[in-house]
Every structure is written in C-alpha cells, then in structure tokens.
Length: 456
Ligand SMILES: Nc1ncnc2c1ncn2[C@@H]1O[C@H](COP(=O)(O)OP(=O)(O)OP(=O)(O)O)[C@@H](O)[C@H]1O
Image 1 (cartoon, rainbow, N blue to C red):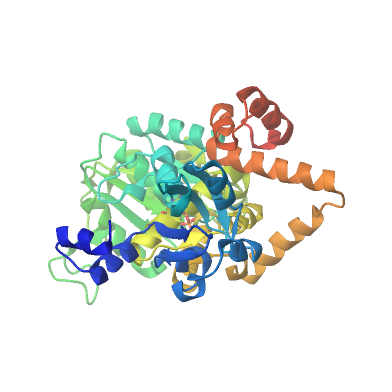
Image 2: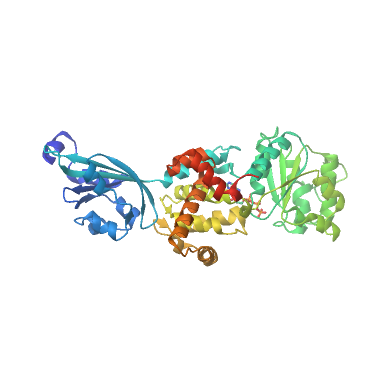
C-alpha cells in the first residue's frame, strides 16, 4: 500500500501527517531492513538532545555505541521477528518504555521496525501524586494535600486529624519549611469550623506597633489619625473559624497577655474600648523557635506557653524523611511543568543527589529549587544543573562510595536499585514487580539494604 492510496482516504496531506507525528508526545522511530533510521519525530530532541537531522540516515548501532540509549532493542527484534518492550535510559537520563514492532514482508523478513518510546516520569509523577497526596481539602489544587511516605509524618497527620475535631488550641513546632502552615490549614479543613474563615497572621511580618490594632481593632477616636468609626480587628473577622498565628515566638510581650485572654476567656477589649467583646475562634500557633528556652529567658510569657502547649505537634524535618524526597520532587516537577507549560524531566542520578542532601530549608527549599530548575534547565534536569552546595554534597557522597572491584560495583548497583525502588514503592511485592525478581528475593534484598528506610 503506497502513501498515495493512504492519503486518498484521508483528509490531509503528507505535511499534515508529519506534523501529527511530531506533535505526539511519544517518540516514534522507524528502521529499515538494514537497521538504518528512516524516520524519527521531534520527540528525539527531548529524549536524546538530538535534532531529527542528526538521527536520520544513521545506523541505530552508531547511536547505541555513542551511548544515546541503553540497552539496545533492535538486534533482538530482528532476531526474534516479534514485538518487544523494554525499559531504556537515554544519554540525558530520561527513562523510556520502548516498544519495537517488526513489519515482515511476504518472505517473512523484517522490512521495517516501528518503535515508540514513552518517557516514564510523567507516569511516575502521576503515581506519586495519586498515592501520596493525603486529601486535605484538595479543591482546585490537587497539591493542597500533605504528601508523605514517612511513618512518623503519617502519625503526625493522624494525630492532627484527631485533635482537629476537638476545639483545643494547638501549637505546631518544627524547622522552617517543614509544612507547619500546610498542617494548620489541614487541621482547619478537618475540623467542624471548615466552613468558617481560616486566617494566617505572620507575627514576624507585622511591625510590633501595628500588630495590636491589626489583631484587636480599635474604637472610633482611639488615637490620633484613627478612623472615626473605628476598625474591626482580624480576630473578630475570623469569628466561627480558625486563626493561625505563624511565628508566635515573635509576638511582642505586651500583646501576649492580651492573646492569653482571648484563648482563655474567648474575649478581648479593642484599643480605646471599655466593653469586652466575645469571640468564637480557634487558635493554632506555630514557631521554629525554642519557646521553652524563650520562657526561661523571659522573652515569652510562661502562662501563654503552657496555654498553647496543651496540644503540641512536632513536624519532621525533610532529612529525617528521606523517602519523601523523590515523591515530593516528582510532585513539584509535575506542578511547575503545569504552571510554566513545559514538560521537563529529571535524570535518575539527579534524583539520587537530591536524596543525599540534608535540606536545611526543608520542603520549601526543595520546592523552590525544583521551580528554579524547571525554569532554567534544558529538557532533562541533570546533576550539572544543581546549585553548588547540593552538587558538592552529592559528589562527596558518590566519591565516598566509589567501588574498587567489579563485585563491589555490582553490589553497589544492586543496592542502589533496590533502595531506589523501595523508596518509590514501599512494599516487597511492588519492588519485586519493578525489578522483575521474586517477592522472596525482593524481601531479602530489602532486609539487607533498606533497613534504615524501613519504619521502625
Ligand atoms: N508534605 C507536603 N507536600 C507538599 N508540599 C508541601 C508539603 N509540606 C510543605 N509543602 C510546601 O512547602 C512549602 C513550605 O511549607 P510551609 O509554609 O507550610 O512551611 P512552614 O513550616 O510553615 O515554614 P515557616 O516556618 O518558614 O513558616 C509550602 O509551599 C508548602 O506548600
């Protein structure tokens, strides 16, 4: 069947057909009977960094020998004369699921091989999102959920859900960027107040002299320049909802006394007022400071501390939940790919280096980095794109573990594959399927290599 008879039945010409193939997000690749590449679509650019012109007319073996992809698939297709599907890795670090289908002539010889290759990361990104996003209020943004694979963090979330139902004041402790604000929102969404307002006040961001009037409001003529009719404070505007006081350690001492009254008696007096106002609000506070120490140094009121500390929740720093780094990375990659309307991938080595890093700025630092990399890197984010600190840290880890014998190298590769798979899959059944080994073997390898990743 020639092209003309094909196009006769279709409503478009060859140029349109080529365009259609180029817009396919999967790579399409055709070899002739001599294993020469006679067609490839635009996707070769994102998978190998090669233009079509660099590929057309070449023998597939030349590209394999230059390391553009591995392992090779075509010799086996020509031998077996059957369709084959395998996983491949490209020179840019993209992971492909490649299917090659031979087309045979009347003499049962291979005439053409039609190959499609799909990158697997989009799939992994979707999977990470589906499996790990614990639905807070997912609403418009599927990433509003709190994502974790870590047993300690899962317990934090379970506990948060339990205390959300009660109306108690909650203190969230943890390093900067660990997700304290996200957790506060999560508690609100899981509480009876979820239809009421949720308001965040960052005590470190409002100047001390403005904070009182912002929070408590004032009556008409309370001070010079004050609005004649007075102004309602933020506390009143959260009636029926939750007030989140972020960085509570930065609240000025005199205000702390007034805050205590709100928590204890559910009432307050606006500036310049004489009458108490009643409010129905729940307070969640958060800090990355050591409040107990501040109490000792008399920079935080002891009575307020004990009042806030009735229920406390400690967030887990990212370096103590290493298994979350890769799923979070996929999650953020997916998010920023959507926002910036691109389709960047990330190499496996790069993911590994990210999981070595200690993340002093926690989830926020990881999120900011992925956003920057999506904007600044090429089609596949690689180790070279990493900022200096993360790059040198990863390099040190690699050097520390460089093997000196073949057996050692094999063991190390085995260990790495098992650990990576376990980080993503978290069960011996899934690791077995992923690495194509028996479940007994997978369980044994997990015991051997992943003890530190297993939940204690
Ligand atoms: N588990 C998670 N899944 C997805 N995104 C997360 C998760 N935890 C945190 N983030 C994201 O990380 C960023 C930092 O989170 P958040 O602002 O809640 O941290 P924080 O502990 O309140 O920080 P700070 O103490 O500096 O205020 C946010 O953009 C948030 O969306």
